[in-house]
Amino acid sequence: MNILNPSPVEMVIPLPKTVDAMLAGDIEKESVFVSPYLERIVVEPDGASARAILKNNAPIEEVRDKATRYLETMTKQVGGYEAKVFLENERQDDGAYEPDVDAQLAEAGWLHDYGKGQIAYSGPVLKLARLIDAKAGDLYADRLGAIDGHFPALVDADTLHQCGYFDSHPNAVTFLANLLEDFDAIEEFRVANACSEGALLPPQDHVHVDGMCLNPAACFPCYPTLKGRQLQEGECYSWLGRVFRYESRNISGLERLYEFNVRELVYVGSELFTQASRETSLQIIDELVRFFDLDAVVQTATDPFFATVSAAKKFWQQAQEVKNEILIPVAQTDGTRKLLACGSINLHGNFFGERFKIMCPDGEPANTGCVGLGVERWVLACFSQHGLDPDRWPVGVRERIF
Image 1 (cartoon, one colour):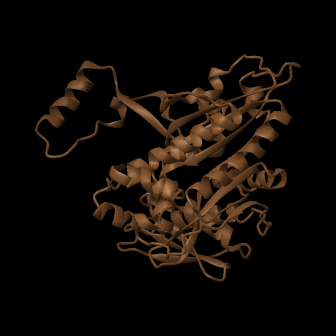
Image 2 (tube, one colour):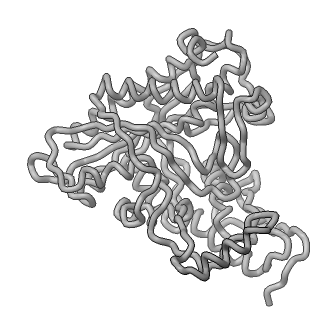
Image 3 (cartoon, helix red, strand yellow):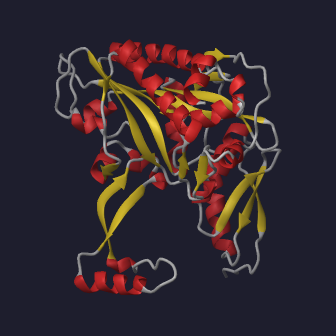
């Protein structure tokens, strides 16, 4: 029998094996997608068990079953691998890291948080965001000959399917919906909202999902534009992309947004070309962190795949060393530091070349790679490491944002 709890309940679930801190973090972050009745799962400090925190009136046994299966799936991952470091930088600023950056920026009037993973910003925050984007774009153009472009924020579901996103990250997708093309349904919605105090949403049978999504990864819209082309040795493209990832209850200010900006770079061509482009990209990232005077490290990493495919896909990424993450420390509320993933440098092999029939001169599918820089996370990292005092910022940045 499924018993409902009238007040919040916690249940302790033993883990099939002891997990390290990295896997524990993944388990906790992704646990918001286990059940609508589950607040989240917290791994105990010893890594041997986890606490499932239920919402009011949750069906206890149903949640226990889902949480147990989720934990069994997640703990199949191979942990304890040693990250390979490709780049490290130590900042010149010797001042303390600043906690509560979001609150300080809001108090200064430079940031407004709508509370649903959307933010508005102005003043030095806006100027810094534009500078981060422009500096990276200029370096990509100068060093790699990247062609600047623009792509829409909407992407067709068929494109996401071709890109393998539904298989890897289905929980992060946002589908667009419209009112059904029906006179009575539209009028019913209009009348309901004409005098209501708050927005009244239409019933599900009056909503039509037409196969369009908000783009969850900046690089995806580029590949259909290259479909069927036969390239020379290689080409690079760069742009500022608008990205949307559903984060449920993980939303947290500048650190984790639903809607954010990414300065994207895509390189496509032969395997040698994409490998050389990645090496050049590492040099560009090194120049960027030095320009903004940031403590930073670039090292091997994996993506946060959906639980049921996470073990296999993460193992492949680790074995092939195809993902390098740009980690920049920021101060947490209690003053301790955490490494924030502010971007990544990736190799895809010929996956997109095969899916979109992009060919090399020899007729073989092209290889691709990409670099994505999360602009708002770079903003957070800069203010966390330099604070709001202009004198602590490097001169070349200070003169342009304050």
